[in-house]
Image 1 (cartoon, one colour):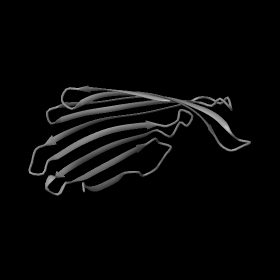
Image 2: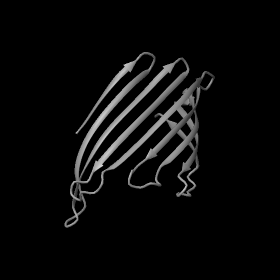
Image 3: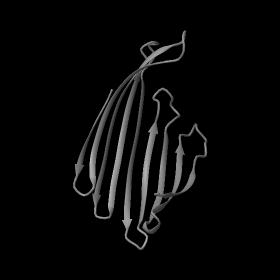
Length: 157
């Protein structure tokens, strides 16, 4: 069961909130288990001329009724800033910081990301080009290299 609400703000802004209750059964017999997720989210975007500020937060608690094990808490959040630059080909550049901790039961799974990006519109071809550079910061016990560069083109037919 989910519910959400959105409030529009002046200047292309909004605030959105949602809640979810998700009881479910996982696994096959004889190892079938009941679990329930309780989830809440909150997001917002504020526009001031060429500047867009945005952010979001999610929290989730999972209860394991069948096993009686400890509850699992998870959270994630992000904040971002975009600046629109008027030009022959409209351009927007931005930065986003994001954090995710998917399980309070695992102490080394938190991830943070720093993303810089740009979006250029080409209206005459009904397309846009997107570039983003992501630097991922893993916790000390996780020595992974997840940095990436992504380039994408999108055409509206």
